[in-house]
Amino acid sequence: MVESLVHTHPLRGMTRAAVLELLGPPDWTAAPDSRPPALNREAGEFEYHLGLWPGLTFDEGLLKLVFDEKGQVKRWNIWRSPED
Image 1 (cartoon, rainbow, N blue to C red):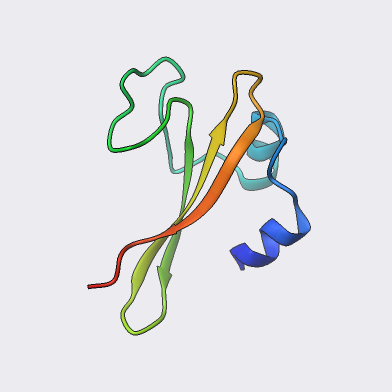
Image 2 (image 1 turned 90 degrees about the horizontal axis):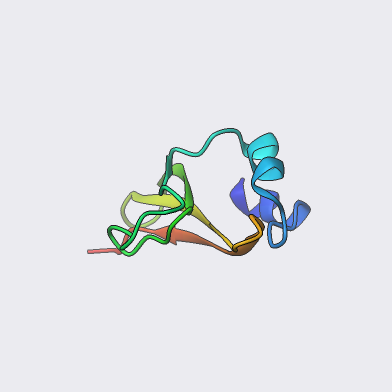
């Protein structure tokens, strides 16, 4: 499902407001002024929990969005927990 989302809605360059309108509030966000960011997270990052991904095992998935100083998505990625 998330693959369809990122193919039909280019996330790079979207504003925070547009992301919130499309996806709703994130499951986690870092305060924009947090320094240093915790757990390899960047200040102002949004994380959306995607639930469990089937495979050889069930891994947790996250959609991570990082915003630039203008409040636009500069980078995003889909993260899966490492397999054992």
